[in-house]
Amino acid sequence: MSKLSALRSHKLLVTLDHGLASISNAVATALVARSTDADSLGIFSIVFLAYWLCLGLTRAYVQEPLLLFSSAPQQKSTGHHSEYHERAAGAALTLGLAFGALFVIAGLLIPRFAPALIPTGALLPLLLLQDLGRYDRFARSRAGGAVASDALWLVLLLASAPFIDSLWVATWCWAGAGAISTLAFGPGLLLRGARQVGRVSWYREHAPSGGFLSLEFLSLQAIGQTSLWIIAGIGSLATAGVYRTGQVLLAPVRLLTSSLTVALLPELSRARPDVLRAQALRYTALSVAVAVACAASLLLVPDSVGEAAFGQVWADAKQIALILLISSAPASFTQSRVLILKSIRSFKSSFATRLALVPVAIGCLVAGLLLAGGVGAAAGAVVYETVAAFVWARVTSRALERAPHAFAEEGDVTSSAVSAASAEEGL
Image (tube, rainbow, N blue to C red):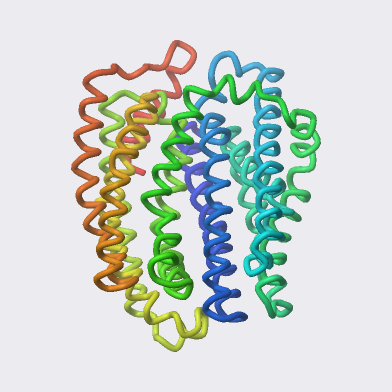
């Protein structure tokens, strides 16, 4: 198989893996919605958001640097490469233990949230290691193992559906399926990573990259996912649950964004500026096409089918999802610019831009929420994403002018040629 064909196969497998992960999240939300009441769905949504924040921080400080730097010259020998991934596993487990303890303590202090917080916290180290294992395989161009791991998680979750009758059981089934997947596909990574738990070498080494990426992620969540906390505080838990369900319905668009980011980032880190722009353009066009297809699918789905899957929240969630899909065009353009900034190691510019836009995003969200509830909050997201796209376009242009791209060295000439060919022939 040629290197270009291998790259295409890798992208397809990464996309398939992210699709399975998105389906698992959607299934978990649907099972809670069908088996519990609106408040329980809101509680699960808030706790899932907290889990997602922990997962995102771990990805920013561990998984993304792993993708960017695992192919660096000093990591190419088998010994260094293995040690590098082992230290990454230790860093992920360390964060999982710390965050998991906070979840359990919070569950003991807030009994109403305990059915979702305690199971998630107890299994969080294994859940974060499962995600690290996926990125470890992506970095090694072995995405098939990641697909198998997420497929097992989904199968186990579906198999547990008949037994779910409460939020407590639903959360144990969702988190337990992920933990079993980790033990089945990553026992070696678990044992090697356990030896590195508590060590700080990874955090010191990746402070310039992981530090800014983590801060940017927090800024992004202040703009995006933490909207659920604002909606729950100003509105209600039920409104937050409906809004979260609307976000779940956008799975195809979110899937494309996350999978292409993971598949393209190592490749783009060795590409020329003109290749970066070409890929960014195709990335945006493909994202918009998927958003249009997703909107058409939502409009064609009979209400009876939607209500069977998500219960009485379907109608409002569908309306919110359709409005949010409008924002996917400017949002995908923004994400393509973020990809460029990461690939040229402009972590500080990316973080500063994200941070500066936080007040704008919160202002748009709160204004829309006060005017028209969950639907208004979705409309506020459209306004924000449109404004943000113009800002990111300017920042990226300046970054490309200010900092010449780091070209591949002699040992990476072939990889760069494959990157260029891949960009020319499309995603």
